[in-house]
Length: 205
Image (cartoon, rainbow, N blue to C red; front, side, top):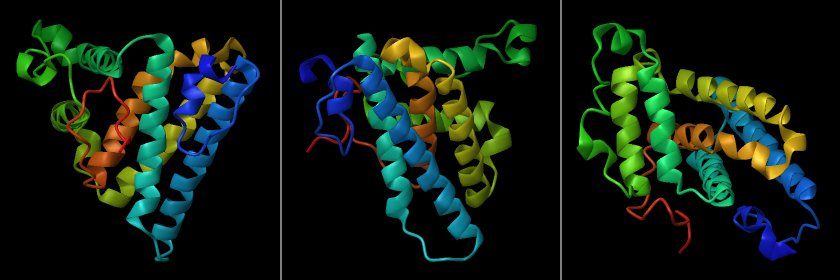
């Protein structure tokens, strides 16, 4: 039954077959728990002036983006479309956008969301979005941002846990959140993503 669970085949360290969707769902959540633990451990080591490696956070980025990509594939939608809708939701919810009756700055500039987007396009879009709509985060120290993203990931996992018995379909809604979090961490680490369509695995050789 492996061919029915491509989401698992795209996990960075999995070569196993899964007998049913519940087993695949459990693997996905357990993988994200390990990813959250890795990020939290990295933050703790930085706080304690212990030796750390950029590869630790890069692996977190890899896992988050692969999971987001896999969930989008499972839903039958390209990740750049899910990402665009997520950003629109955030920007259009801003009180100043509603009160002024003006289109959000990024979404009013077609060059930012030319379809299809590459992984690099999404990364650049996220930088522009953060400058205009996440200024409370954008200007913080790197360590503070790392800790904030670690907390966001744990919060996201708590929300995903509530839908775990809905199977993989119940988790598809989180593809956009995981993508945004992975993109933000990649930006923080100066980890340039490939100029490859977002409909393709970003880490395939």
